[in-house]
Length: 577
Image (cartoon, rainbow, N blue to C red):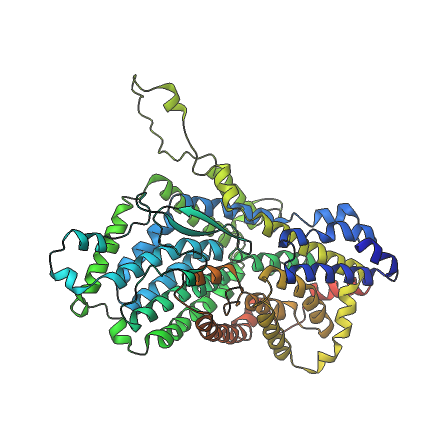
């Protein structure tokens, strides 16, 4: 079909490139085919239309950020395999206690912390079963059962439900393999998760009061929002940030402004402010304003029901046992990778990259791939240098399973996102070489009368609305080339527009179809769509306000946004030429 239409297209590279962009965008928006498959459209249409050579298009599908993602996924696979996330979550729950307000804050902080390094979807899928188990304990625990000696029947009813035991009837666990991919449902054992359409089935939790219902709604929705907030903090937290970074480095190779450290310095205060304000918003919306009652840490003010719940949560943590050797190795690599990212090029002092003779050869991807590769070498069993017993078989001595295997990596690696990101790079490269991006920029000269902050605000509002119905990677891939041309045409620092828009694209929190974390939370059946819209609208507005304040305050000094940089002028001259 595309070949037939090509015969009637004007022999202009801009028109051919625009046609490919429209076709790909339609496939992404309609999801008539998988997102990864739609991202392959430029791979065959650009060569057919003479926009780019086939070898040039192929080179766009594997970039530096792909290596960065692969290394991070190795560490994420180790965290998930050895249940380090479960230990962190349960430990924080024990610190918070059973008071709803503190429990809400604790789970939001824990989810935000994990989502900084893992994908939003993986974090939500790992934390929600723990949240559901805690909710089960909070709602089912009764004061009468504490006072009276339980009989056999009551023992069965109040027995804590394990997160990992392999007895009893199976229930359905939601497993999302990648951040923006298809939902996969697998049968697991004894995990407290509901089927995808819980409205047709009886809920696993029997609400004993309206307060219990509000607690379940509040905790469930807060996990999705906290995962989104955490993903903003690091450049590898979401696929949208990775797409922005690679597109920006390709578009402005001489910039050398955005790296892991500068992004963290800008986004960490945003995440902290959003986390605190969102906690107040969720607490006020679902739990009311009685913070003294819901956030008290005093043991005297705890009800017997809350004490029973805390004992059961303590029992769940004790089932994990002492921290294992693989958990210690994974945690060490987790911290080491972060430190190496921060100290590579801190900016205010020379980093470890300056110790090498050739500059610019090492990136954040170099660190992540190196540490990820080592996880395939380090054995999961603690090395023993003592003499082997004579009775030990040679097979047992040689059997040394590593921290992660290639199967563990494959289960976690979002290959669809990799291809989707590559398709976005191909579209951007075609738009640049054909002159389409320059033509689009000239059409937006009418916006030159607006101040820069108004242009950025309008762009953020536009993408915030679009991303509620279109996947986040598809949205940012479509808008990045347009916004680069707009910034260059209006002589605005491209980062002044690109960074806020990249963050606002992640605020798809109002509908279950907005992103997979929303779908995971909605499938548990505690909240309705109207609850998600009402709570998500508030979080969206909070995020938009905080991002705009950040980019106009510390963002200006950090990225020098008050001037039109030389590296953007060079790109603009290249486009016009």
